[in-house]
View 1 (tube, rainbow, N blue to C red):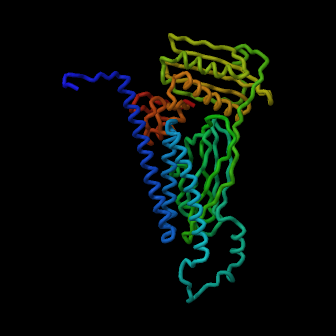
View 2 (view 1 turned 120 degrees about the vertical axis):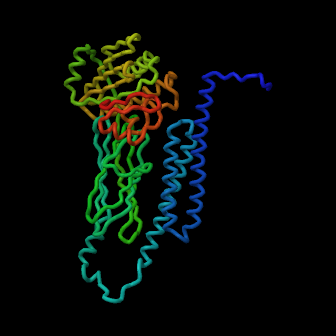
View 3 (view 1 turned 90 degrees about the horizontal axis):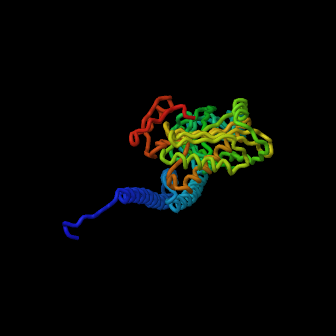
Length: 432
């Protein structure tokens, strides 16, 4: 090429090149993590006979690396093969972890922790036989779990109780949560690593409780599983499996024969006991009409009645009201849709008397709407389209998908106004 010749690139070509480069860079980063973790796993296998404790510690870290890489891969459907590879590695690594823990249990069970004391020796078995027998009847750690629907989310509660006369340390609760549920928040503020929460200590007979807040993405029926690992007073590792808890989010089937006018529907909404709302970001305000039409078309596929719909292209403002009756329980449900171009948001509200039912239905509407927008090429296949509050609590700007700092998220939780440093959009509280 002569020095006088010029290369002509359009702005779109440049943006596509940058985007492809970013995708490739992320792919390479994930692949590097896999290679490094694979090498560490080989090392853990090679040292298990010489240093079992170190091998267990290494495997715990390797599982964390695989899990964190899998979370990143799950954010882009182009990385689905990588995600599946990592899923297989996590499963195989957990099997290896379980085998190592069994070896440790057997080893400690037959090997004295310290030399036998011969001077002033206390005969524990004869001094306090009743205490020993009582403890043998109980598990070292009790795990209880339950869930409830609250504000359109599922609060999954776990309680831990130390049944021994010594402290348990380095507790790690690793959750296996169905893909239809998105973990957005937990309390109290225990350290989180991947799918695990860390608790440094559980004292003698102490109880501790924690809650996960899970956002339903679509309807499902699947168990939540968890494993609790910890060390006892002799530094012996333990791993207990929580009894699975089945979570059922059953989407209602509608059979609506009766029409209703707008005044009656609005009056009914006020009388219904539960109201659940999701607020989505209006990312492409120039596509307001198409987005509004897509949501309406999703709702019209259900056997429900449209009582009102109106859209102003000039104001980029639209409203729609729907009324439905469930087929089995004959529950009345009201759906309200609002597209507000000025404030760059889309609200979908479902009202009814059965809270689990409206939570399930709203999740299904959100999932179908997301797929419809992708099908209509209004959003890209790798774009997220989640409730604004869920995105922020997941440390992502709902409008440009760049990361938000933990300090900014905490300000949002505390009720303060925050602003994305990348797209400058103000992220308001009380959006839920």
